[in-house]
Every structure is written in C-alpha cells, then in structure tokens.
Image (cartoon, rainbow, N blue to C red; front, side, top):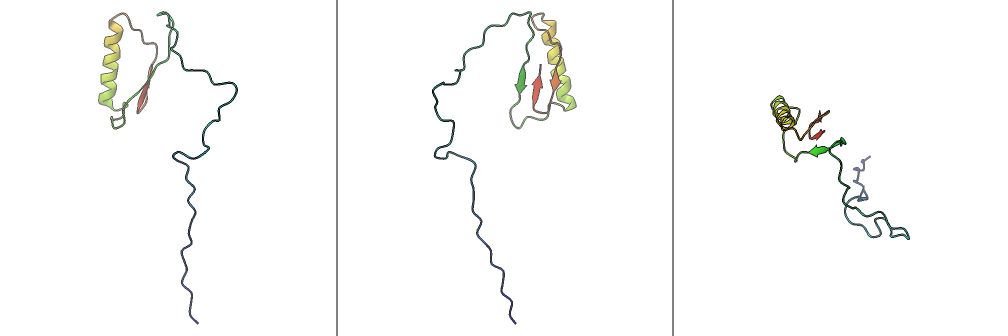
Length: 96
C-alpha cells in the first residue's frame, strides 16, 4: 500500500499595513478640533516635558550617559532660569 505525500496548502494573506480602499475616519458633520499653538505658560507654572532620543542611540540608563545627563541638568539649574523638580531616565526617553 503506497502512502500519499502530504501537500502544502495555500494560506490567504490578510494584510493590515499600507493604504487600503475605504480605510480611515470618514468625514462627518462635526470636524475634529484643529491643532493650534499652545498658550504661553507662566514661568512659575511647572510643565511635564518628554524628550525622545533618536533610534540607534545607546540606552540613557548606561552609567556613562546617566552621569552626563545629570551633569547637564546640574549646569542648567545653576543658570537660574531653569528649575528641575523631578526627572526620570528611561532607555530611549526622558521625563522632566
């Protein structure tokens, strides 16, 4: 009795990337809010800033980079026009 060899079946490819016909939010009667310039903040008000580094830059948590970032923060605070309340160094971004 001979055995039949298994046959590879074809798989359908369902793509999720790229431009597709009919994709995206449809225009409606009430358009979304436009992006406008932010109002100026008074210097006495704190603000949260997130800075992201470029791809390929070593982790900001490396000892050498942590020291350099802390040194830069210290120099900026000594100028008098910059105050740092709290910061958080992540691998690829900084929260101030």
